[in-house]
Length: 281
Image (cartoon, rainbow, N blue to C red; front, top):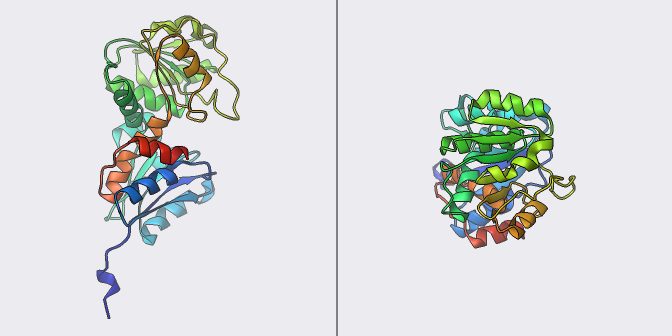
């Protein structure tokens, strides 16, 4: 009789959220697992905020090697972790957890990496250090985007949010390179950035539209929207009509998952057209 203890363990990972049924991550990870013939599993994990600590203590015992974290757990997961990367601390949230062999939980945030990588792959001539950027929104996604842009060398960021106090708080955290602009003045500065980023949920299916006058956009700009449902938002459509280069938000989702997959399953995955198709289907 074979000794079951000597058999290789199938690595398990998942995405923790409340709710979590909307997440595209299971389709993405299953595609990569099948593509590379890896004996692993990635599942959605609906965890109530009241039981997050219990879940994080239990999952490693069940064979989980890590997990992605989505709303509303990103802050609390970071607080519960034993080791937190500098970028997760700066952003104030974690989206990737690694359950280490020594029992400790390692927390990271790969959203900024996903954002930058998406732009570099789809707009390879874009130079983040060459000129200013305009960022709309001041939530968790904006924090990840701004941290990534500053790390990449962007010299000046014009930040506008419907609630000015949130933008001001973010500016205090990130320093003098952030200039807060009143929401009603956002249309006037849209043309001032080589890059324009919508980090809000405005324009997403089921959400209110992004009601901003876009007439100041011009052909020398790169415009991206973190919303990927719909894939071509009104912002991207309007920007394209102005001659701007545009990059949709799906790539950020795909690229932010690369470091976690590599750590959990031992293979660095490629983001291809087939990867996009698997998630969109």
